[in-house]
Length: 356
Image (tube, rainbow, N blue to C red):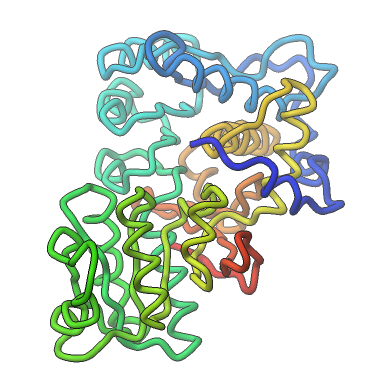
């Protein structure tokens, strides 16, 4: 999930990383760790875990001698995650940050024995385990971009779907939010749409009840989907995209000219990314930013003496490198997103919306 650093860093503002960290600076300098960071330090995702550990450390004051959180290895498995959680509980930890993978979350919640778990997975289903979901979910991006599209006169939206989990969650989210905002949703199975030649307009019309939709929502950013999106743009239909297009290369963005999508504010991320790169000579990805934000949340809760479930549910929410978030009692996360339009191979922010 590595972002195109040239495009993101070029959108930096003077706010700087300090503005993200300043509200959290009251953490006691000699306090024992109150949070644990569960990451796959060994195995195939060890490099990802390293970047997330480094990012979380950026939220710690430079003059602190002891780490503010325990970093524990899950090995990338449910069993390893449960063992790591057990160690955290035995050590008196009050908040679990992680794990990364959805398959680990259930075992972590069980082993956490009632402690709040702030999971990094972007799978909305982790809420069913009792964890809080910090990841950027399909529902967040879909709800935000549909609300913006409706404000621009869009009423009929065809959703490009297949059996992939993210597509299924995107369609589910679109249907859930549609009636609330006055949008009609149609399903267009991407595996049945023509890959070349004529006929795309006809099949989109058929899928959308007999006439072309006002907009088409793409759920993925793989090459086949991007090629199809380019042909949809040629038909003059407004294209809506997933949050993952914020990580798009020039080739991707050059194909979806004029598309709208909702993603974390690139300027806020750039402030974090510049500091990370100056320290480690490499560009961070979205998961690294999530780890930074989680560590910041833990610091604020500890400073307020509220390292607890109730603390996470504070109505004012939390600010971070990926924007403002506010947790809900069902484990969901309302996230402020920037509505972006693709223009000449890059993006510009045109509005802001809260994705749920």
